[in-house]
Length: 114
Ligand SMILES: [Zn+2]
Image (cartoon, rainbow, N blue to C red):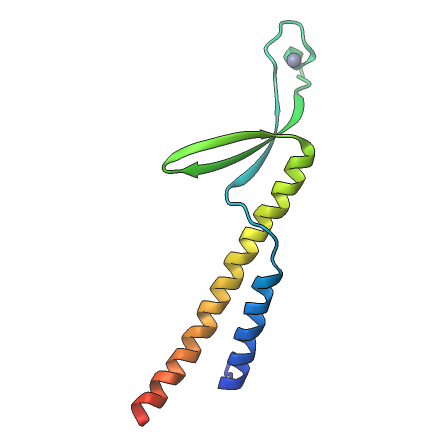
C-alpha cells in the first residue's frame, strides 16, 4: 500500500485523537467459571454434576505473581470494558508505530537529500 506523506500525517493525527476518546484501561484477563463446593450430597457432586456459578475473576501477573480478584457480575461487566479498552490502546499504538515508521523513513530520506 503506497501512501504519500500527507495521508500518513492525517492518519497519525486521527490515531492520536482516537487515544483521547478511550476510556480507562485495565490489564489482565477475565475468567468466568463454574465450580463444585465440596459439600457432600450437593447437586455439584451429582452425576452429571450441576456446578455453582458463574463466578467471575480478574487475573493479572504482577511482578511475576498471579493476582486473582473475585468480582461480582456487574464488576465483571466493567472489567470487560476496561480490558477491551486496553487491547484497543495496544492496537492503536501498534498502528501509530507503523505509520510513524513510514513518516520517519520519509523524513530521513529528505534529510539525506539535503
Ligand atoms: Zn455444591
